[in-house]
Amino acid sequence: MAAEAAVADAAPRAPSVLARALAHRGVLIGLVLFGSVVMVALSADWIAPHDPVRNNFRYRLGAPNDVFWLGTDRFGRDVLSRIIHGTRVSLRIGLMVVAATGILGALIGAVAGYFRALDGPLMRVMDGLMAFPGILLAISLAAALGPSETNAAIALTVAYTPRTARIVRASVLVVRELDYVEAARALGAGHAHILFRHILPNALTPLVVQSTYVFALAILAEAVLSFIGVGPPPPSPSLGGVIADGRDYMLEAPWISLFPGLAIAVTVLGLNLLGDGLRDVLDPRMKVEPR
Amino acid sequence: MTALLSVEGLTVRFGRFNVVEDLSFSVSPGEVLAIVGESGSGKSMTALALMRLVPPPGVVSGRVVFEGADLLSLSERQMRDVRGGAMAMVFQEPMTSLNPVFTVGRQIGEALAWHRGLSGSAARAEAVRLLGLVEIPNAAARVSEYPHQLSGGMRQRVMIAMALACRPRLLIADEPTTALDATVQAQILDLLRRLRAELGMAVILITHDLGVVSDFADRVAVMYAARIVETGPAEALFKAPAHPYTEGLLASLPRLAETADRLAAIPGQVPPPFALPPGCRFAPRCAHAKAPCSAALPPLAPVAGGRAAACIRHAGYVVAA
Image (cartoon, rainbow over all chains, first blue to last red; front, side, top):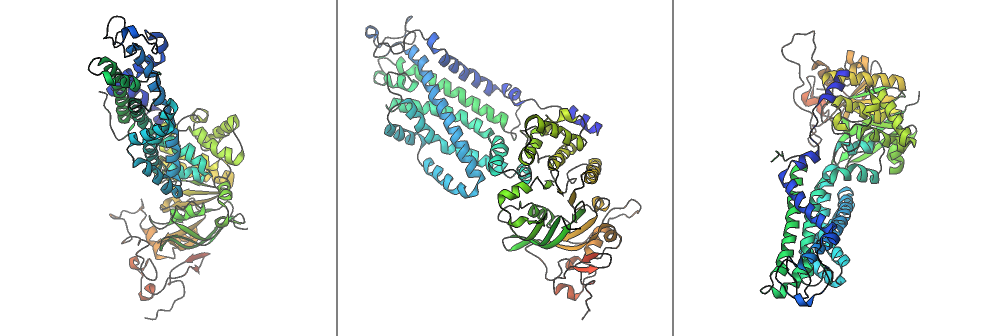
């Protein structure tokens, strides 16, 4: 007995998920990139050198100089300040979409995976939504709902929830057959308890990874929505909106579209690196050597 | 004494095939019944059927009367109160039968919350007491550990503690020691024996290990290909097995005293439910098989010493051929 306990205590503990994640180069770079974008968004009010919505017609389409570091747009607004504030709008939409797809996707996926009778109907609806290309669905919904930040988030949520639900369902299908679920049932647990306390917490790992991709997709898609004019309405700066502002001046003033495009690229790259890295770290089948 | 559990004609059917067929037995309060059989004989499915946990599309029929109520006719809601309450189960695989994301204390606490309405510090104190009861050293610290921090034997103790949380009158232990080391097996069996004596609960022990049965069980039911082939008091059954299958099982036990080079084995395998031979299902593997064996399924007939066996040699048959 005592020996048994001692052996259990002496067993080397595997390094925690956090430690393994931080030792992963992709996770680290992704965190730094995405983290800087988040910092910029959070401190936008203090670090933006100019008012992002203040017109200044004397400096219309000004090239980058020492006052307007990244130049000005057709109303003379400072591109750098608009990008800084734009990250805020883009991240806000991304966050809303991630939260909404996460909650909806987890609920739908869990219910579909657990209750066999609901699996067919729910997943056919999801399949129906998935039959449309996500971005096309989002554009038509956003156009139908009218341009606003919330509507863009709603449209993107509808577009990306089916994929998330499918991933959670697959994961629930695996976990529901595990012994401890049977054991909980044998102790008298009800369906809701089994699903939400025993199955879902053990089935959410893929959702974490999926969320980083949805975040990146949402930011990209928001840019598309704004670019074609169904995103958050002007003058509020979103990254896609700033790109759209420069659309007609690509030759004379390429900086207007170029720099917000780079900002999106950095954000999405960071999120994707983070997601790839997390998948490596969280997937027990992948043996991750610290790189 | 009235039976705590009485099972009549229990049948579990998957599609066209019976994986458990026409099982009848009873368990008195405080009694230990061992259900013995090879892999695939239907013993685990029997356990699940008693708890009404047979996975779909399995269909259970017959009567399972537990403390006066027919479990098969209870609503799912009422059945949930029985499970983990008056009737609890310990599973075969301690390594995977605990939820990895909750501490041991919280998992024991769940059963306490449902069936006894305990929560918070009361549930925790009771969990510590239960861990002590199953002889886990330093229970007060162990209660806040996660399953991965415990060894297999420890986890099985935790599973037993969870099963005992609501003082069940009947504990179903489905091969509780199969996945454990030999030394740990002995400890767990000692523990179960002690707990049964202390708590006075009845135990249905499901196992393929006759060694486990011999010094724990009061009565034994031997299953073969979905049916009970022999049942009786453990001692009498071991001393003079009445069914050739029981005989074969006993003969295949390794004995230290004998210096045989090979172990006696029963030739062949348990027939799967979709390829049952006609008549007695053991006949193709039986050394005593005669022509009438394949004619009809022999019923469970009484044999001397309070036993019953499903073999025509005891059914007073007259060999016609």
